[in-house]
Amino acid sequence: MKSLEFPYTNLLLGESLSKQKWEPVFHALFCGGLKSHEVRSLLLFLAKKGEGGSELGGCLAALRRGEPPRRIALPFLIDVCGTGGDGMQTFNISTVSAFVIAGAGGYVAKHGNRSVSSQAGSSDLMEALGVEIEAPFSRMLLALQSCHLGYFHAPLYHSSFARVQGIRRELGIQTLFNMLGPLINPIELKYQMIGVASRKWLRPVAQSLSGLKRKRGVVYRSKEGFDELSPGGGNDILYVEGHHTRKLRFDARRLGFSKARKEDYEGGGLKTNRQIALGILENRIRGPRQEIVLLNSGFALWLTGIASSVREGVEKSRWVLRNGRAKEVLDALRRATRRGLHR
Image (cartoon, rainbow, N blue to C red; front, side, top):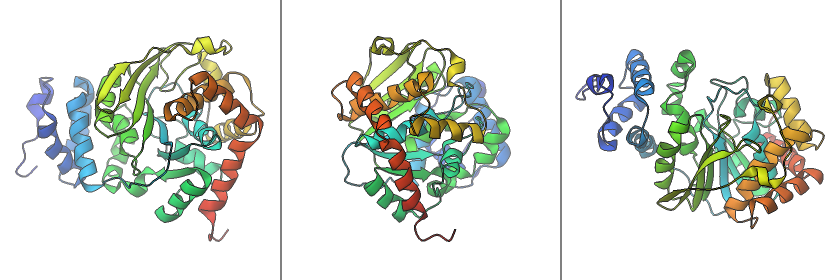
């Protein structure tokens, strides 16, 4: 690195640097000022030390400096996204939940990417469902306004972020960029739900979320290890309102969901995950797979104020599925994103 000392010694000693000292390091990374072996070393050393709020904050500040989010005037504007990397191989729970939230009246700016550690990322699934994920930004904004759901494929909006995609895939481990992904939505959100793969990530992600001027947000991890809210195993949740963060007491088991095993939420390859997604959206798949979607979408409806309680949010979500509203959102999104394309 030119005119910038790479923090090898600090990383080897497990020392934390301030957000202000990390920002130029990550700025150099995003601008192409770090060589591939330096990026690998940085990610590996950080993973070994354990990423904290200062590293994540510096990385986020460096990225948003060149990629400020777009502000749009829509109520109940939310994203529901997990960091990935939990190793549980679940189906695409948050992506399916996005259609339910939109069907209930929320506006979902869904931000995602192709798979890095799972078999099918949210971008892979959206594409398999017939959504044109590379539609122009202007068309996706119109889709968000008219369909209540827009999908923002990360590489289209974060060219600097895309530079490390190959290295992340090569390393095959959870890195700082897992935490960063949900925080860099190209739309200025009002509400946000972020699931994390590791309990140690709860506090750093919540700290960064509190600096993004969301009206309300939550960062969570199920006690079973999912980066999703779980109906049966209990959940660790940090609630963020403005700049204030506190633990949230919430026991989903009181909502009457059936008992389930981890295996009940498993997905598979892209074909399998597509079948599961359509089965839930068409109200053909019930049981644990539907219930975990009901919980996550119902929680989002409470967070945005569309529902007065999580219980009410779950019931609204159930109504959306029974009445075909979630599938209608998918059909509308397909048409909106593919308009004008040659097929």
